[in-house]
Image (cartoon, rainbow, N blue to C red; front, side):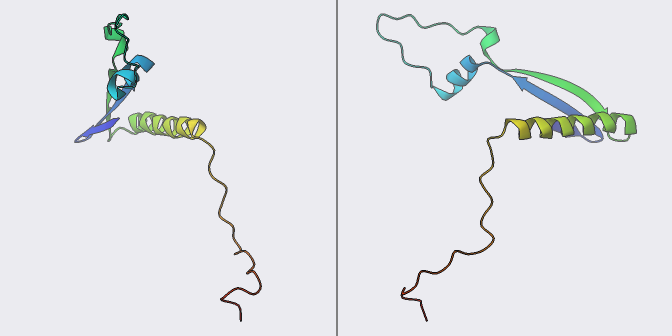
Length: 102
C-alpha cells in the first residue's frame, strides 16, 4: 500500500501466511466432532510494515520511490498468468449461403 501525507509518502508492505488466508476466507475445512481445532498464533495473522516517510521534494528519495514502484510493477508482471491471445485483426470470412449473403 502507498499512503501520502502532504509531501510525505509511506510504503506499507503486508505479509501473511496461508493460515491467514484460510482464516479470513473461511476456507479451512470444518473439523469433525473428534478433531481438535488448531489455535492460531500471532505468526498466523497479517503483519504490516511501514517504510518512510519519503519526502516528495527530495530527488534522491523520489529516486528510491520510483525504483520501488518499478520493482513492484515488474514483480506483478512476472507473477501474472499468461495474457489471452490478441484478438484477430481480420474478421473471419463469411460462410456462403447465409441469410446475410448478397
